[in-house]
Length: 389
Image (cartoon, rainbow, N blue to C red):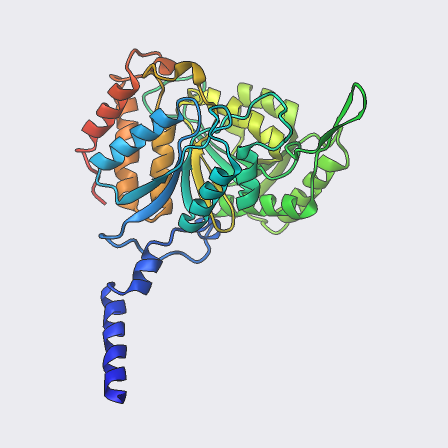
């Protein structure tokens, strides 16, 4: 009996050492958490034969078309990712609570997702929080990261831009706390907490440290909202003291908008509450080509969701084959990097950037006449020029 047990132990050990045991497979398929992205414990390197499951939520507008582009490029590049796809929409009557729970369960299991914009209707239908907000809160996706970076080959008013916007997206003005105190008077509550302000500030400084960046700027309106934004600003200043090698500044939101238009090169990493981040994400995307070219991602301590940096459904383009898939493809490449699939990440990212740089295939938003399909085929064609690492 002891001999049999010993043989069993040796077999298990051999499987672990050769990478064929179930525990190794579980670890190999485990993606990096937010802390790993910022220098915490890393997942083991991805095995060549590992397949990663990723939740996909195409969303509204051109989201399904952009996700189709991602799937086509992934297939051509032999990316070892299997998508678990869910269609969730508040405007297309695909918005049951049961479906939302299925999406959340999938995201919690897979820990990584790709998501299009889930459009929130303007009309009040009895509940203030939309599905986008519910997903962020339920998964505690507190940190939205948008890397605004000029694309070589596409010239804008400001070239060679490279800045990062970090937005706290679980509180602030998007609290879903509104009520009519007396007829004709609406009160909308903005929630700022010390815990979440310090958490996003620490995320920003950790990000700057990990990525070799030199400055963090806190964006606020503390001159008017003295208590709420005052607390946010105080927390940022307290956290800044823990990072003496990173320069720290603060700027009022309205001045920040003007400075971004006039001289965006003065900024490196910007950190801010929810509403300001939403505005600055879109403004900054416009500096480098618009919503179609800027990727984004959201992190909690356990989960990562990859999407476009400026969230627009672009409903007027649905079915017309004119949407620019650049942002979603770059976001997909960032997801592969997160999964430790560096080879495939570089292959996809390099192909997209090469198509932009060549300038022969451009969608309408970038001044061209190419279709979404044309762009995808150009990217697939450039996958042949695989980088060597």
